[in-house]
Image (tube, rainbow over all chains, first blue to last red; front, side, top):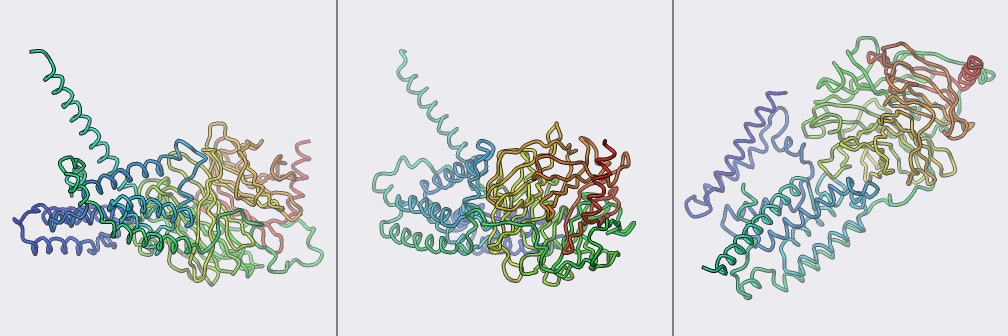
Length: 210
Length: 422
């Protein structure tokens, strides 16, 4: 069993190295065909059996319901790095991280604060959950934000039951997406606070008497 | 992949002029198309709801024991009957625990339990054994699910297996719901379901149920379900990570072993009460009896007036509970029989108690096992078509024991217990 974990770790490292090598140089330094070979090899490695299970199944076992925004973020990020095409604009990224941080915090933390409330339950009620997801998606789309497309993907996935889960919220959120979103939002907030302080200090320095 | 660096740090759109800002957004035509598609998909998704599991069931009952006519010889109904046998043979594995039993439509009994080197070991498997109606000898254990089988069927890493329950649905299909763990201890559990169309001789593949938002962790099962007239099954389960509380998994069995609809309902804000046992009381009333993990160690009860959909606050009962599983059934005369460990600490005795007032007060019943320092735990109690009660439990973690007794024996034991107390 331990050897299975070690070999899984080794393959996972190779996979990450391949991904990193394929996407490292986003300029013209690395030819597109080379990048594609790296990408395909990385995908093929996911099907390599390790300890009786494919590498993908090991990953899937620990994160069984990757949300559509997470899949979209990975695809948009890789596409941007591999081909240099900007799929998501800054406002789209901000909306993606803000939604993940806020909605994830509410869904995962609310039982600790309001024990009698169970928001996850309503994800099994299609009229409520599909309506809620559609309302959110339309709001983002009406403002021209591409994150609305990811929510539409989540809604489509839910209507086709594309994931293992029968709960609509699992199509729009997952713990990994939530944790990354919280980290990004906190990081951005700290960076903005620092910039604001620097600006305030420089203003006061200019205004101070010589 | 540095997902957060370039995309995430791109929040400053400051230098963009008004025209540039407009250009990075979706065009109005794109917005309208997307909104139309979203509305269409939402309408499709909302229509997709296959079953209405959104309201309280109209009626609920225990397993259907009236399908087969009672096979009791004339004149023997009032004779006390008691017998004991072993479900698992001696030494078939080093450690066994957590048995469950069900009466199948044919009248046979099927038992399931887990066994291996020790609880939580990688070699632990789920075993089944059957007892034909009218016989006294259980068949040799069949290895029904082991870690590798579960890993293959579920296509994911499985570290260990745990509690399992088995029950037939209204069509005669037999269901098994079992615990598996992919990471961590028992609080990392998830539930899986299998079905059998030949009363447990062969089983279909396992299917994972997604019941929790955070990596689907920490739902466990221990006790038998209730049945409703609209076809749904209410299976008592519980949550164990950080905060522990009881829940009910409502599921609607489908054709060919599918579970087309299921959802989990939390019961109350009470915590540290787990392993709920459900007892339908009739007229939409339901009793839930709970294992106590709190320091004062009392068995707790909760009532429902709408067939298990919503529940009152938990009340401590007069009976102790040493943080151990218990089980109960309701007899035809309305009394409730409880199997439990009568102690605040330790599981070294196993006893019956009877309540004539829907679980509010209890009369002490016969002591079934009592040996200091030993373990007799995890009772599972069912009543067969003939009205005979069957109790299986963990016997010193070495074997699964089966007691068979009728109501006449129980009444006789209750009278003797009362006399000894006087």
